[in-house]
Structure formats: C-alpha cells, structure tokens
Amino acid sequence: MGNVVDMETDEVTARVALYNPFTGKLIEPGADDPVPAAAALGLEPPRYCEQCGRRMIVQVSPDGWWAKCSRHGVLDSKSLEHR
Image 1: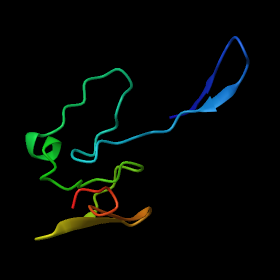
Image 2: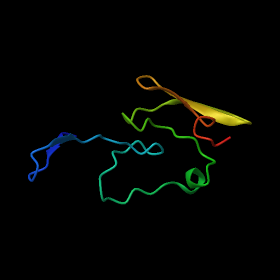
Image 3: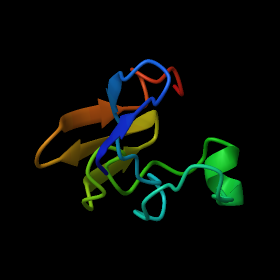
C-alpha cells in the first residue's frame, strides 16, 4: 500500500496494510471480510500476522494460546484479554 495525498490540505498520509488474522488475505477498505464463526466466538487463535500476513507459529493450551510472527513477535490471549 502506498501513501495517500489529501487534495484539500496537501497532507501525505501513509496507508497501513492490514491482513486478516484468520485467512492471511489483505483487507481491502470497504470490502466484506468475513470472520469464521469459531473466531468470532473467541475460540480460534489468529493464524496469520495482521501486520505482514505471514503464517505464525501457534500454540494452544487449556488456559489460552500464543502466536509468534517471525517479524513482529509474540501475541497471546492474555494480552488480548481472551483468557
């Protein structure tokens, strides 16, 4: 994704690319991006990094989960208050 220029103020705004954490697909603004039912209920951990779309290493335990992106570090259910 590139930069966006506001024609009225000539301000340059960087557009950040976000990826679906359950499918790894790029999220397009205004497009429908369905979330799997298990993920909507909080039962499914993310499998892809939201920042880069890479597949993450995921470990599920009885009290939660953690997921690790090789570029962006570790995310866990405790930090997201899903435990």
